[in-house]
Image (cartoon, rainbow, N blue to C red; front, side):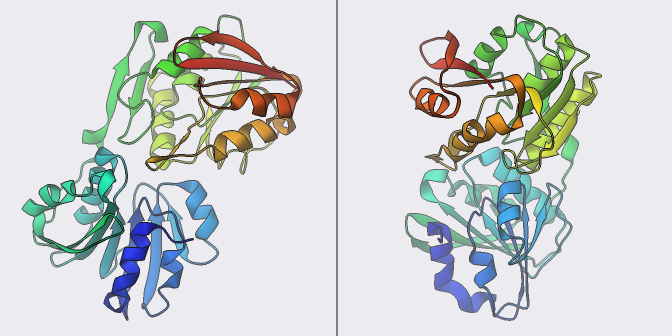
Amino acid sequence: MISVESQVLQRHLPFFAEKSVLFAGSLNDDFPAQLTQSRSVQVVSSYYDYVRRVQSAVAAEFSIEPAHRAEVIVYYWGKNKQESAFQLTQLLSLAQVGQEVLVIGENRSGVRSVEKMLQPLGNIHKIDSARRCGLYHFQLQNVPEFNLQRYWKSYQRADLAGLTVYSLPGVFSAAELDMGTALLLSTLDQPVSGRVLDLGCGVGVIGAYLKQQNPEIELVMSDIHAMALASANRTLQQNGLVGEVVASDVFSDLQGKFDLIISNPPFHDGVDTAYRAAQTLIAQAKWFLTQGGELRIVANAFLPYPELLDRAFGEHRVLAKNNKFKVYSVYA
């Protein structure tokens, strides 16, 4: 299936003929593999699930530090303006004067802001508008500087027991602790032991908190987002904590069983709501739990997780709730 952004790009196929093309940003379909008339096609993505899906059809790299150059960069503007600005600035800092860039994005994702962002760096013009998307052509004149350290943010909270949380743009809970995670942490009032998995770890706050409070646990943290993995690693390191941080699409790259799987599972996909990751987490968790192991998750109260939990585990408990979130617990 081709996204609306790629449908707009399909109207411009001759532009890609006999050129080397690098795709980046929030692309999520197979359009790069369709450019059979291009001299070469490469993809760099900060989303592991996407790279796993397309790497058999096109050269794809999972990274936040692109190492490739191409005559044309095609950037898919995402829902998070800060992350898009980070990625575009990084790509352009590695390019040369004259670099051609196509920026495509849905209007509701705020792609129009790319005009103001890129105007000081070169010539930018809107060349197409269709499917409620905007397509921009940009030619680089002033190569920007990119310093990764300037993008790091950090915060502390009294209820995090002295932890300092570090984050890059676009990561869940990047600027502050979200209400759902805070409610989940409030239920961790008993000692935890054994092997623990923080699945969809984001900035790493849940896993880091557990490791700080229970130093003997064997901690694994996983996410599909390269920016999240970098953030979780730094949160551990800066707080003097040890854990394994793994790129994994839910359970795709995880080994062994866990005594506790804990998560604030994502339910946003782009600017739409999606439940695939949470459904997979709940359906498959029992195969990754030890006998008597616990799955504990927090979710928006309106989401249909009780039915999914009962189907997979036979029952569920609500450990805490407020007017927006509920914390669920089930045992294998």
